[in-house]
Image 1 (cartoon, one colour):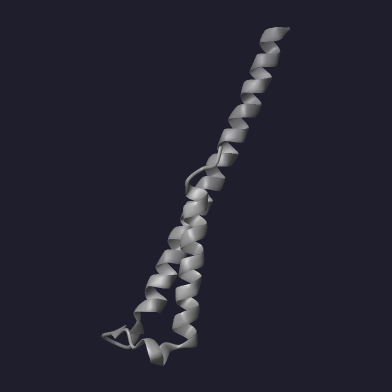
Image 2 (image 1 turned 45 degrees about the horizontal axis):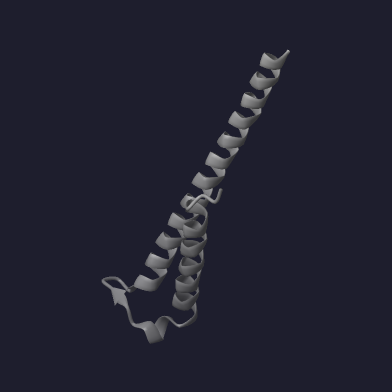
Length: 82
């Protein structure tokens, strides 16, 4: 079964990478700086990328935990049969 964190993670990773790439490629055209010349596309792209990576890592951790529990359950079932 597909964990919903996988597509959400990929979505935010891709959107974050696009925003960061745009901020680095065209910083003059966006003109979305606040305060001390901090580009908002760069900030939000980085935050979106970090959030996407968190979602992916959480889904991988849960998948590993689920597979370990399945192995333990299989071993327990085999012991009960004998």
